[in-house]
Length: 395
Ligand code: HEC
Ligand code: HEC
Image (cartoon, rainbow, N blue to C red):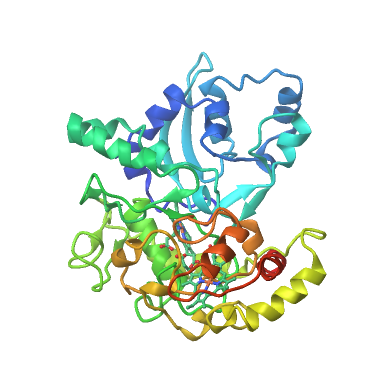
């Protein structure tokens, strides 16, 4: 489901946004890799790999993209391809899955074939920080139906997000409440989440608001309100039009809920994915040991990043606005809780940039931002800051 289920969202990506036409007309494999789409090398038959090696596959032809979609090789993209008598292909239906944003590949086939990065074995749960969802949606001809001025405004917002970011509250259930204002968040990992009582940066997901569990709360939100899957979402804590009030009813014409029954297994799969361990030799262990003492002691990090998962969200704890040292101060106001969840830190080496808005490019920037926090300056020496960074790299 995580890899291949669209929840019926072809109605949004094909019937409304007409992305099948966009892909067919303009997205050849080189362009696709350029906007961060990934190719699953395990889905490529040996004959195709041999043809690529022999230089017999045209990577600047959109027909090649359609072949890859037909093979199920484009991560997070599910399509139906019709082939005419002359062999030419047409993309008749297209939809997206969770893997579009929350999987990447290890680039092994790119390296072996001497091709641009983006082809390799799937890494589920690893955020796709190259993917540029805003730039992709901006290509939709549907936006022109909003009128020229609104289309320009919306395309400007979508194109301002950049790779690895997405605003999950800009367009809700197909409606745009404020075309000129958006607050994109970095696409987070979907690994290392088992044991947390709250999901997402602001902890909106919990068992009180979705009996299946915290991750399922957000999976329902995203699949229905963002992907366009056929289901319903309602959270009375959110304002009308953002999932509150009467909620979002995206059940299709056939009246079939294609989301709810999938939620338990979908959540279990995400819970089964552990955060990846730090690669051998990627940090200085003596410095990391000194950093560990600082983390628990002088730097006071463990007061929030506590326990085996490095977060007090294992106890369902959330924090007020000033707990985040990130540059953006608005995102929290769009949430159901109006609070922050302490981010879990296992595997944190893997997914720069950091904080919900990506305002820290590196772990060194994270430590600097905490050290210089005007509300709670830490007064760490240069050496102590460097040690803390080595410890974070080891988690
Ligand atoms: C267009 C990109 C996109 C798609 C598609 C998408 N997500 Fe996300 N996902 C995000 C963003 C951005 C966030 C961060 C929201 C926040 O934390 O405020 C997020 C948050 C999450 C989280 C929270 C992680 C945590 O630390 O608590 C989980 C779990 C998740 N998504 C799983 C899924 C699943 C399962 C699907 C498919 C039903 C899905 N996502 C589809 C972009 C996406
Ligand atoms: C008051 C509670 C609190 C304290 C103390 C605290 N953190 Fe955090 N930490 C948070 C919250 C909340 C976030 C999420 C903020 C955001 O994304 O805007 C976070 C995010 C992070 C992240 C980014 C994780 C990611 O996925 O992007 C890192 C790394 C981090 N903290 C390290 C530290 C270190 C190192 C210290 C000690 C110097 C520390 N934290 C102290 C609450 C805290």
